[in-house]
Image (tube, rainbow, N blue to C red; front, side, top):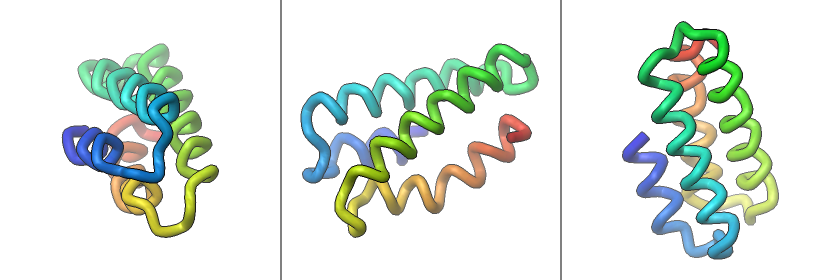
Length: 82
């Protein structure tokens, strides 16, 4: 989560609003990660990942957030069994 958070903070392609939204979703993932087997936490994680993907989809192709989604999301998905 720290790596994902760092990508978001330093990605110059993100608007301030998108950065704030993305950081909020990373926080939701961190909270969900405290109990990844709970059904409600999985739902929270799934929603946060969708929101982050949506934000990343609106960015130019070579941004840090897009790279992070591609490399970090598979591990996050495994954590939550998604």
